[in-house]
Image (cartoon, rainbow, N blue to C red; front, top):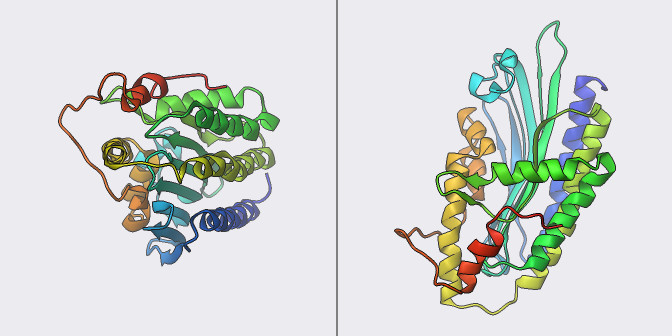
Length: 303
């Protein structure tokens, strides 16, 4: 591995460029600019949140870059490696969630991140994490297959075993245990990844980040102008409730951000703007809403 400082600098430069490229592509699709909100964290570090609300296509979306650090890694953040608790640490990443207005256009999440710790007279500990996953409200097989194909293509150069492994990890991670229900049609997810040397691990993470636009934009452009009515919007709001439940109960990034004194506005920018809950609601048999549950919210090998 290159020196810790050089590694951190290279990853940071890539992540900031990735944020800019993704925002530029999304602005072109929406026709409305993202707002930029830079912030500093008193404990160390900061970031820039790029936000769109009430756009032409996106009801709400955020593409955030953060680079934060601290002197004393909390034990809750070192669950898998208890020996690094208490070390100096830094974490950086790009994280995005997009909530289109049209119920036929799926919500999407993507994240790529880098984490490292150091202590006197000890080797630095580092790893990469991230992935992307798709959450449709109305299912289209074409969209799910396209999204998974791009995920597979991103990982293929770094090992034919990675896509199947990260796909399973995504299916297991984005699962609402209290509902016994997947959040969406999945994608890929990985964490604590340092199985390859640093340069190859970093290249793999870049490939995941670089494939995001091609994975999502064609789907968005296919669905954003489809006709819909109150029924579809109502179901979209109901299903968005599952998104909120997952983020607040299970999501490691959300929990780490809140536990480590992160900026609440940036951490919770992933929340959808309009959400509904109902008591024991069931979709009408044979409906498109029921088909989401039977055909899409199931563990499936899309490729």
